[in-house]
Image (cartoon, rainbow, N blue to C red; front, side):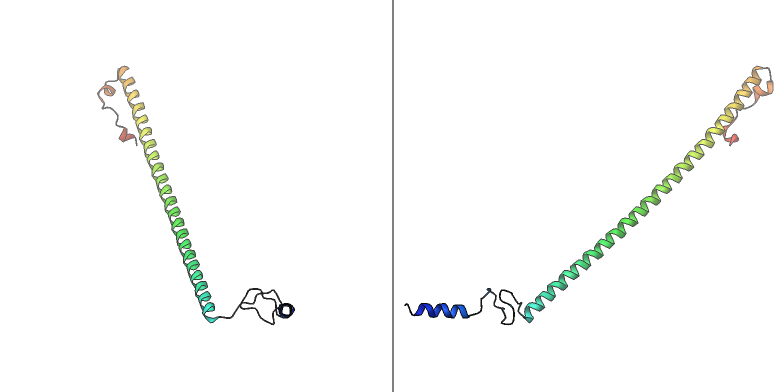
Amino acid sequence: MMLSWPALAQSAASSQPSDGSAAASVSAPPGTVVPAKNPATDAANASFAQGVSDKMAAQKAEQQAEWQRYHEAVGERQATVAARRETIASIRTTQAEKEAAYDRAMAAWHAQVAACKNGDKQACLAPTPDPAAFR
């Protein structure tokens, strides 16, 4: 047994150190891993990369569509708010005109009542002023 021990030590020292990779190359520095060239693996990797790329493109397209729908909804909302504000302004203008006509009719009625109290028979017989006539 003594003779075999130095022989084993000598053969182990003269062999290339193994890094555990089946793809270790004699031309590569010791301790480095050189990837193997396997067409099936390369095709699978390319297919996976294409799938990832396609999925990312689909997600980006969906995100763009989502942003487009969002901006359209914001535009519609702004148009609705603007239309509502115009409607409110129109209602307020109409109401102000009606109130002003009513105030003028009331002023005419108060003048008519005052004239009637002062003895003006025409003012007493005149019809009550109509606010629609003062618009």
